[in-house]
Length: 293
Ligand SMILES: NC(=O)c1ccc[n+]([C@@H]2O[C@H](COP(=O)([O-])OP(=O)(O)OC[C@H]3O[C@@H](n4cnc5c(N)ncnc54)[C@H](OP(=O)(O)O)[C@@H]3O)[C@@H](O)[C@H]2O)c1
Figure (cartoon, rainbow, N blue to C red):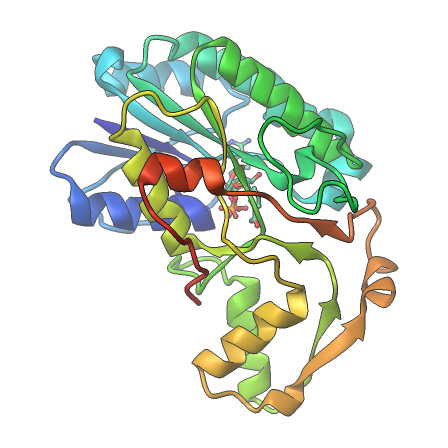
C-alpha cells in the first residue's frame, strides 16, 4: 500500500493524483488541518497531527502490514520566516515528530522524505550548481532543521529528495497556490511583482510527483538525490512562463530588484541555489527534466 503523510498539501495532493492514475494498490492519505476529500472512495483519509503520538499509532494500526508500505513523508513546518520566528515549534514538527514516526514505521518497504535545496546554501563561482556530494552550508534555520531531518531519515535506511522551489495550480479545494494568485490578479488587471533573482532549479508539482512515483518503483536509488529541473530560474522567469501559458498580459508581470523583495523577508534567503540533477537523470534514464508550467 501507499501512505502519503501531508496529502492535504500541494505536493501531497499531486502525488495522490499520480498514484490514483497509476496504481491499484491501497492508498492511505493523511490530512492535518482541513480535510481534503480528493478521490474519496478510492483513497482512505485519516487525520494525523505528526506531533501527536496517538495519531501516529492509530495510523500504524490502520495501515496493517507495515512491511508492505511505501511512504511519502511531506508534512513539515516549512515557512522560512515562521521557522526563524518559532524555531522550537518548528523543530517539534520537523525533527521530534519525524523521529517518532520513523520509529513506528521503521519496517516500511520504502520511505521518501521531502527535503530542500535550502540545505546547501549559496552557489559560488566554483559551485554554480550543487551536487549531492557538495558540502551543505544552510543559511536559514529551516535549512538546518531539514539537514538534521535528512540525517535521521537516512539513518533508518530511507530516502531523501532535495526539492527546489515548486510551482503549479492548486488541485486542493481549501488552498490556493502562489501560481493561482499570479493568474487571478493579472487577469483582473492587477500588477504582480516578482523578484529578478532568487534563482532556483524550479520544477512543477506534477513533474515532481511523477518522478517520485517512478523512484519508489526502482531498486538501489541513492539515499540522497536532488530532484529538480535542468534550468535555474528567477521568480520573474517563472511568472513569465505562467503568463505565457495563460496568455496573460505581460505588462502586469513586474520585474522587481531582488534586494527589494529580500527586504520583505524575516529570514535570510540565498540569491542563488541551483542544484545539479545529473544523478537523478542517470537513475531515471532520461536526458532532460524541464519545468512544465
Ligand atoms: N513548496 C516548495 O517550493 C518546497 C520546496 C522544497 C521543499 N519543500 C518541502 O516539500 C514538502 C511539501 O511542501 P508543499 O509545497 O506541499 O507545502 P504544503 O502544502 O504547505 O505542505 C505541507 C504539509 O505539511 C502539513 N503539516 C504541517 N504541520 C503538520 C502537522 N503538525 N502534522 C501533520 N501535517 C502537518 C500541512 O498540513 P496543514 O496545511 O493542514 O497544516 C501540509 O499538508 C514540505 O516538506 C516542504 O518542506 C517544499
